[in-house]
Image 1 (cartoon, rainbow, N blue to C red):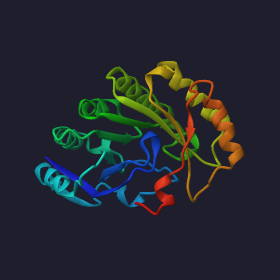
Image 2: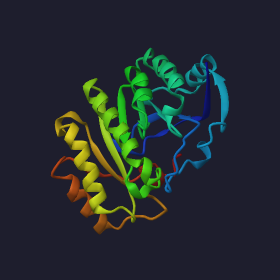
Image 3: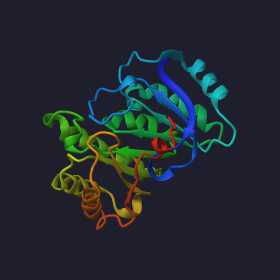
Length: 237
């Protein structure tokens, strides 16, 4: 088995509920989607980066891993593109007693369930209609997959949280519809966080819009937080 890796590096986690933790990032190549705010466009082609065997990739992870690393983050691209390889790499990390962390749009529930046994922390990113994730024809199907992944993750008792990126284009009614779908299948007690992440450097939302979107989520999940990409504020990758 081979894996296409774009890069492996240690940095400070800048997103989500575990921001500020020392993290080894394993960025996989490949993503079929077109979110307008994507900040890793160079990793989207499946042939970007370098190809490794699984053994070679495990050795690269071992030599790159620093002491006191809190977790290993599988990111992309979208890791589900190479789900078999991610499962093998995550299994290797777990053997070292280091938490594994998956961040994905969760566009395919079957691929997600293949990886899930080897993941400890799951960030499920739900896309808004304005993100240009996919065309409107396919949007609901992919959101349905993300919902099924959310159900699988909480059923497996994984540390699970939700992230939604918002921009100046985000419509309140679209977010409300998406949040309704999410909390129709899970309760607030089943997830470990809900993060609204404003875009950075492109179509940035106003404070008034962020507060409006916060107020939509709050009745469903009182611990909702607006968290920007903090790593960008300190110049970290």
